[in-house]
Length: 336
Image (cartoon, rainbow, N blue to C red):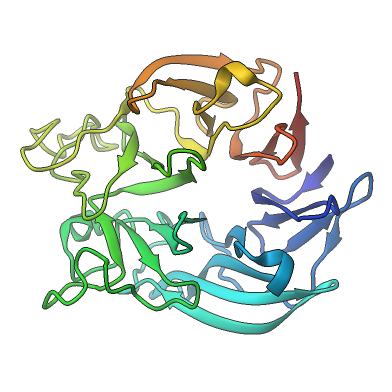
């Protein structure tokens, strides 16, 4: 559908069959109309582009057809103090207007990696986003006073919600929904069951897929199947009492990025299964999910796609759209 893109990061489908929006990590938001060439959307906020930092996700408000609101996550700040931010804006023709910064991750960090930045709307209309641990600050993933290594949940205007699990607890950040995450690069809601799925990079081994529950502690760095990049042991525990085990673990790592729950007409046998992209291993995988939310199988799909995959999404017609993480990245549409 498009090629020559600068590390495309996310895909969102515009209603009315008028095309898709695609983010490039370098800071551009593109509109790709049906059968047309990509066009840049004006008015995108300035982002910090360094290493893994840049423009991340784009998601549409659940009532986008009425209010034209969309949400961008991206890196901002300086080399010594940077963080992930969410800005809400209104799409007016070919530009963004009425910008409002609604959330920032704190504290700031001095590393250009592990930002998180995946967003999704839950069935109740609340917005969730993943945040990374900043790599050098992994202990903060267990600290409720830190926004690093978390999934956060908010109203559509950024306010923390009163039914968040740690709202009102002294010293805890009120936006936190779950914690103990490392570098989450996938977040998806099953529109039928309402389940919230997440995946994250482990270090050397220990990539995880998690089924997210309110207030859940997912273990990092206390429990992990991975080793440090030096080969050193991070923790003696693969599992730890009171912490939630992953539904799927990869050793060695595939570096998962992009996650969708398949609900569509084109592959009827895949209903409720997870579609996962991979960076280090490349390509796409389908994880067979049973009615109880257990992952009972894995299959490499579409073997002709071997590139690093950053995002995968299910379109309204049931096709799969794939963004490849390359200097000259592509956006692909896959059908049976």
